[in-house]
Image 1 (tube, one colour):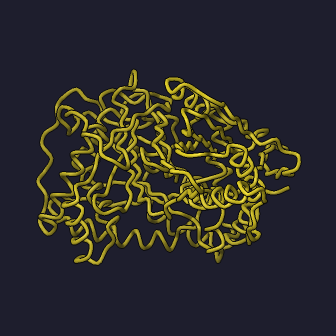
Image 2 (cartoon, rainbow, N blue to C red):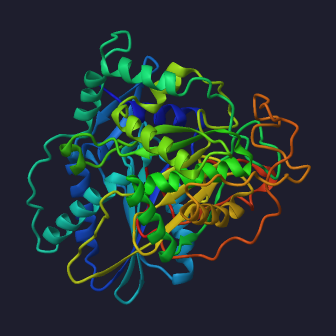
Image 3 (spheres, helix red, strand yellow):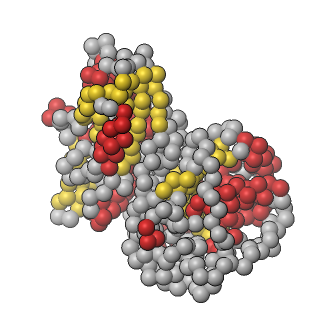
Length: 501
């Protein structure tokens, strides 16, 4: 029996705990213009499932423990449907039905697809991958292999590709061997866990962000995307600041977000989550699979200190995190044992993602291919900022479960603009907050009372959401009923190819 990777194991437990849900579906939508060979596309779909074992794996339970069972491709009926000709006004409903259907991980392979014809030589392809089998880094190899298989199939041949050097099941076994046992003080797991125990000591309470309503006792899953773009001129300034300070652009943006969260009432001890690719061997870059890990950035903020002081913390801690990135987040939570709650994510509630994965490219002969955003309507964190390193501009976004998010996008742009203009000077103290608005760390779902409980929030009225910009999206749950908190997919912005983390 093949064990799950640590990331898969956590996903499996979430699936068992939450029950049937499409929260962790990664949907992809593509439009084709031209003479699409739907039979060849179906064949390519099956070829890719045969090539990547993880796409034909089910997850079974034996004595309370999950295991992978890789299915023989000869015995699989590909989960594929050709809808034929569909009226354009019916397409959204069909797409919503396909992307919103949940996977039974014990019986269903974690990939499904369908094709619809919407006009003369106009088609829509929908693919859905469960996060247990894929992430943002999986999209490029998936697109590459679908393209190669389709090109072969339209000529009546099978794809002529070399065998993959490893499969995801090899990685799951190798990961356990590489990490070793935490009881062995010299193991990778023990050494890196010790670093994180020291770095994150005392982090337990949720970040006291301002909320329009009290946090519910049990987190929900509904969210909303609010797009926002970073102007080219501002992005160029951020790039210049990064060069002069010897840091990366992502470090500057993280530091600006830390300052913003502080000014929103997040206190002086700010934590952010950030995904990291987890593909630490070149052979893994060829695979579809769930490799991404999450690390926690913890920054101290002092209003009397400069932005450069915050930026230096981010630089130092990010580099240390890269050196200690192998500890699976779920193992770290088990080791740290922070105060757990069904109302919020442990260790951090805000996530910053810098999407620098290799861009996927679907190259099908004779076809014009357009990839379209597919909002999921769900979120996994209070606030999820999703950015791509394009220039100019650098589209940015966030997906959120908290009502004030729609005002956070323009605030963050102002924070970034202010940081590059006065990086060596202190920033002003946040203005007194309006009365009556609860903080994220209070209420029936908080599980604890933060030191500043009873104080009101530091935000004013919510301005209109920013105008949409091409590329990524900013997500908000301003419209969600009764303050139901949602959780964001660590990818899945309003972008041509969703960037699942």
